Image 1 (cartoon, helix red, strand yellow):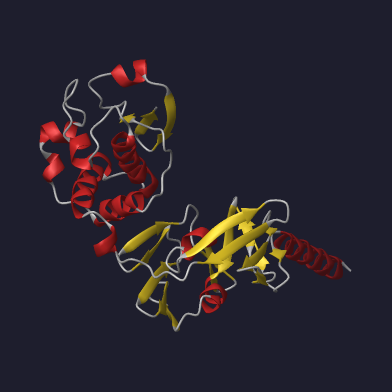
Image 2: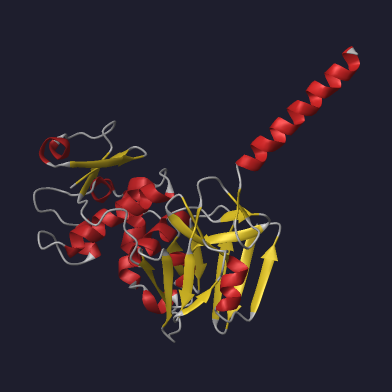
Length: 286
């Protein structure tokens, strides 16, 4: 009797565990098992419903399955490198690279920030729709009343990085990011780049990246200029962060200052500017 009772308890525990595991997944209309708290959404392309049951909001970001979306865009080839966990999508002269867990997509030397990480769901890559739409030159809008992602074709072809980025801006922006934030996360590096570009866009500062970095009105604005580290060769992540900034992504379009409170020799910023947020070791200010 004791043996039977023990077996029954074991079976009951197994059923409970199975139920708990099942409860953590949300099964979409297309059969995908999505993470908890995900919300299915509709998608249209040029007015026609597409990707039925395949698009979902996860952590406030809309994801679509890479293969289905790429095929919808008319991709010529889709391949997978298991060693690097990287998918490659080719359409005409455009080649797109997406790595599982990454925060960006690269295409023809351009870099697009995904906000949330590229995910592997049921052995399929899911990618934020706004980022994956960029290489295919598709406009993305949102209809809140119908909870629909509205995609619109433009018939344009992606401009390569060599022709899109201003080489001088990329040269100096990547170097100031490297000098100021080489040990920070990608988001932290992007935020530093945003400060430079926000100043460039402001009437209070010079209107070039170089001018902002080497601005000496009121004193040297960035310590790497005085220390000489501005001239160091930038890391690959610093170059990627700079390209993401130059491609238009901004953590905040109003931040104009940052400082590391642990090593800063002046507290003028913290005493005179409104605090925005902290990323890594840097405090950012408006």
